[in-house]
Amino acid sequence: MNPHITKRLQQALDQRKQAGLFRKITSAPGIRINLSSNDYLNLRTNPEIIRASQKATEDYGSGSGASPLLTGFGLLHNQLLLALQKWIGKKSGLLFNSGFMANQALVHHLPGPNDLILTDRLIHHSIAQALGQKNTNFHRFHHNDLDHLESLLEKNQKDYGTLFVFTESLYSMDGDSPDLLRLARLKQKHDFFWILDEAHALGVYGPKGEGLAKETEVLEHVDILVGTLGKSFASMGAFILTDSKEVTDYLTNFSGELIYSTFLPPAAAGTALAALDQIKCSRHQSKDLRELSTSFRSQLVEEGHKTIDGDSPIVPVIFDEPNQVLKVQEQLLDAGIAVAAIRPPTVPPGKSRLRLSLHTGINSSHLDEFLNVTNQCGVL
Image 1 (cartoon, one colour):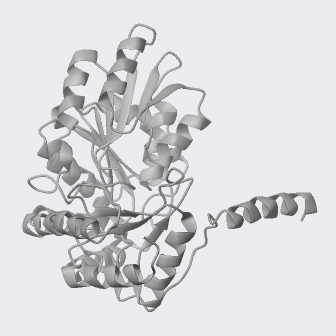
Image 2 (tube, rainbow, N blue to C red):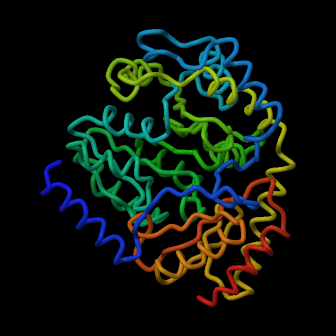
Image 3 (cartoon, rainbow, N blue to C red):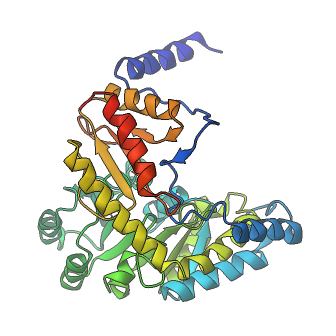
């Protein structure tokens, strides 16, 4: 290999290491308490879900074989999409291989050259990266600052064809939410195209797990809802739902993210279908999960830790320096507790954190263990 390339790559890696920001993929077989998974309803090991995955493979094979534009939707893919549309209450939809690909497709293909995209400053990297790749017009508003968003809407309303607003209903690093009711009012006032990513809210919020847009009664104002199958659905893949068949037909014809990729395996669709049935009847468990999150945040503050208010399963424990986070994470792993260490550039400098992802298999004694190990590290 060309030594100039390897030298450049190594220099970049060395800089990451010196800053305490080097990433690596590890294997930790001795984990007893998993606080890093986004499987909020703890369905990955549910026997009914596993049987559904096995049956899908036995009935339809181990893979889809090609792009859906070549082979069409399999029976389970079609059943899943129809079930998702009925569950959320949107007339049309598409499945994608991942939430990353779904968000990239929306940014790459829907806005025109005379349109403007407005996104939260902490929007997911799938959207942020797509904005950088496409020659598009965009502004970012301060995190959850809807006054700032409104000022950008008023300033740019007359200068662009369509204004797109892309937000998440539950942010993946802070575990907080925007004021969805006010966003709906802003949409009524300024007539923007609202894309809402509900990846982390589906399964946890809503009368039947349909997410925060449904819970706050703003779903009718959402033009496109993005969801994932890799979190509460215990599977993989993603979907978009909308009332506009023109949107889904357009993406089917122009989205390379969909057209040029081998499709989700049947087992992914079968797993998600079975999980959807569980999600609809898991309201008691999700209520308990939110109450556990609220009480644990209070406990964190009482013991001198920095966190963010809320009731979502995503609980950040914030530290000043990346190396502090790595030290605590290492001690937790030694104790059999898996927690994600999040550092810049994923979060802003000075906001490194342990990102706890609570699920219905976690109880207060597990969180007490986490706190005991963390407190013993002496990095407060």
